[in-house]
Length: 339
Image (cartoon, rainbow, N blue to C red; front, side, top):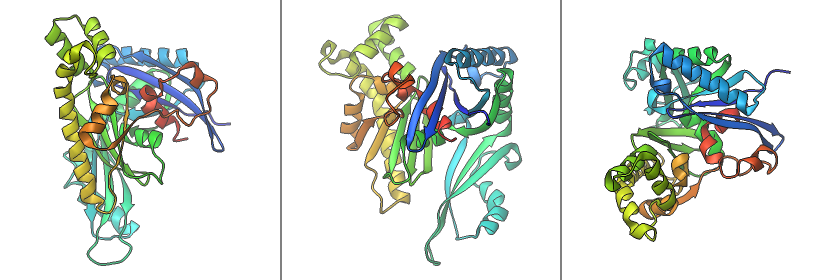
């Protein structure tokens, strides 16, 4: 029996692993764990830093008792170029022959230096003026090589690599779902992903994350980082907490994120004119910020929900031991579900 593939999310601030089992329509969480990344992490080019990262990955896998060395690995969204393009209707053979030339117009890197994947999102049902939509995903070869080197150094084998957006889409949406915007709020950045009919249509990495919020509190109240973090987690953007003083500091930062979300809604409307965007799913560590779900709902007029990829998992075993933590493991879970 082949080794089961687990999800390995190598983020900027944390390494996370998740192993799931799917039996018929039932899903089980078999293992999950996280560990803070060493300084530099996957963004570093230093062999010493990357060796430390590999050791952290190895430790995380051991702590989770994964029992497999075969993993699915996520690439940071900011290191991957994703573009939805429109082309005249082409057959699969014609598209295969033309894709590199077409991609050169949209990918800001030489095609010879990237791994280029593409997927047909839609084709016009009748010939005429309508165009087909194709999703391009390009990952620099040097970035892929770095990930593969780190994974190998950790004593693991990468079954495949994919961007965070595809893992998030798999974790939170089904092919029959309406247009959905996933907002994954991490420590350093926030990833926006538009999905529809099981396909990723748009991704954007916004340089706003939990650390920005913590630093704003540190500056405003002259607090050390650990205490500022406590303020953030306790008061969030609730107006009835600490007279709304923390909320007043954080809301302007979150309004930057709201602006990007509204741009994503406009983009979705532009390419899916008959399908209205109504659903927004918030995940990642920032999803736990008190008041953030209501704040985003008020600012965007969308149906906003807390994203828990373990919501429809069997409520037994590991899920019961880690209540409410699924949102943080969204990417790792989405990777593991590709099995």
